[in-house]
Image (cartoon, rainbow, N blue to C red):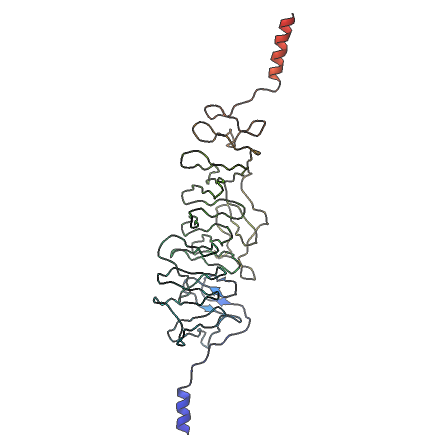
Length: 355
């Protein structure tokens, strides 16, 4: 009997994965975590997570997580491990974990990332996001961008952006522009650049402005208007303010920037987050711009014969009394004479006629 009991103890089943309480997630190393909508953390690099809560696995006594037979963890949308029909975790051919369709990511054979219904990104077995092999961004059904292997953006469930390793911001799918690792804006499937909710334009790496689908003009980094392929400016029928900087936004989910278009970070150079796991931003609800917008009323600005805009001495467009710019043939604003000069001339002619 003693021998049989000893043999049974030697062949007992491994311990099941268990979950801890509601403690706050902690992380090792110097990598700052970001979170998705369910509170599950996402990681870049090789940082080892330690998890909380009701949807995240706990760890054994040695401080290492519980893994399946291949040494790679697999989880479903509820935070418990997902398995295939044979009772083993499902992985694709490249060793990247595959997930079910209840809000957990899946990957195709080429390593192109897929997103769930909430826009939460997918990650591979090492805890880093999976990307396609090209530098072209891909988008999910809600317009949330994905990135290539040179940048590691992650998003939480509310669409609040995180930041990649180079400090370049990434944006959600609510109309806010997304950028790749070089700071070049990402575009949607039709090649139209992404704009934020206030219509602020996105720019490419050369400072050339982009245009939205309605033909609203954007401006380059020097505050001068942008032109189409024929060298003539493109404007819509309404008045559009001219800005030469990047706006700053408050803590509603849109990041704030300093004068060098760099996102706001904490003292260690990593993004700062509030108590809910969302990035914390400075400022007020009103976007801040570094120049005062110039308007022409309800009239579209005029241009000289060469297709370039004419400006006054201060670099701003000159306008006449009706709000329309007045220019001469050379593109120089036409100066108006003193008020009443014509009336004085008529008075002198009438006096000479009488006397």
